[in-house]
Amino acid sequence: MRIVVSEFMSLDGVVQAPGGPEEDTDGGFAHGGWPHPFFDPEVVGGAFDDALSTAEALLFGRRTWRTMAAAWPERAGDPFADRMNAIPKHVVSATLGDDELTWANTRRIPGGEAVSRIRELREADGGDLLVMGSPTLVRTLLSEGLVDELRLMIMPVILGGGKTIFPDDGALRTLRLVSTATSEAGVQVCAYRPVASGEPRR
Image (cartoon, rainbow, N blue to C red; front, side, top):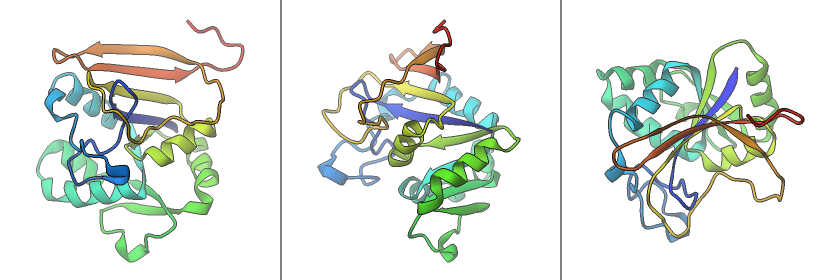
């Protein structure tokens, strides 16, 4: 399986609380819901549809899973929501109990086993393993070299601070731009794939 990461991102690299004001206020973050003015169904919505259409399973960190689990079951009847609810899901958590996994088709990956278990998923046959949000998890995946594609919806806004997906370990990681699209609102939807050692960048 390929691990594909899909994120709303500001120009200064922030991915925190795209869904709404109360989603994640850690660090005093006050801009929850910031992508909403820039969303359009064709370019940005189309990027999500495309990512989900090739996904065979979803992978979340605990906080993002909780947010999604509280929202999507109520939207049953919409084709995108029905797909979100039906697809297999994995949530990385050291604290969620099995009785809390109320969102259909969810399995828990214990936090201490996350890297090894995700490696096993990645080595299995199948389509994409799609990660949305989950910045702490994505930083770990990038640090471990487990991300096969980054799909970033870069919004024309600067948020001045907040959570990011990028490791701060000083390591150089080269990516190749494989596709791009621009919405009328100025959103850049860009897909990047890692460049292997010795591989040409083009």
